[in-house]
Image (tube, rainbow, N blue to C red; front, side, top):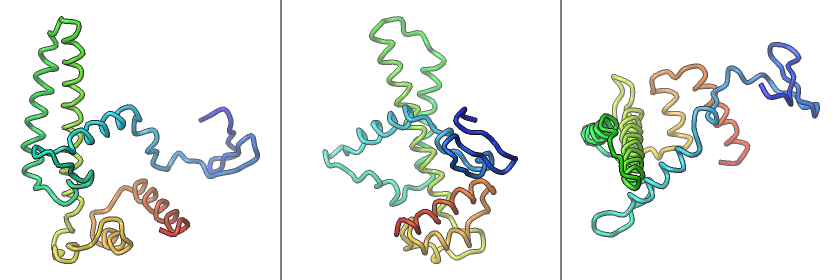
Length: 177
C-alpha cells in the first residue's frame, strides 16, 4: 500500500488529501498484471507484421475477423519450438550475434502472445454448450447487445473478473459509450 494513504478500517482507505475510497485488495489490477515495456514491444511486433506479403497493410484488428484455432495452435508450436531451441542453445558468443539472438527470442515471445491471445479470443467467442451458434453470430464485439449476450451465455467468470467488467461497463455508461 502506498505511503500516501492510510486505512481507516478493513473496507475503507483515506488518502492524505482527505479523499476516501473502498480498499482495492479485491479488485482486479490490470496495471499490476501487465508490463508496459512488454506491451510496447508487442505493439511494435504487431505493427511490423501488418504488412502482408503482397505489400498491402492489413487492419490492426484483422485477426479478430476469425482465424481457426487449429491455425493458431500450429503457429504457436512453431514459434514455441523456435523459442525453446534458442533458449536451450544459448551459445551465441559474438557481440552482435547476442543482440540478434535476443531480438529473435523477443520476436518468438511476441508470436506466442499473438497466437495465445488469438486462440483465447476464438474460445471466448464460443457460446455455452447447448446454445445455438447463430445467437452470437453477427453481433459486433463491444456493443451492448454483445455484452448482454456474453453475460447470459458465457462460462462464469471469477468474481474478481466479473466485478472488473461490471465497473468498466458502468464507466462506459458515464462516458456515453
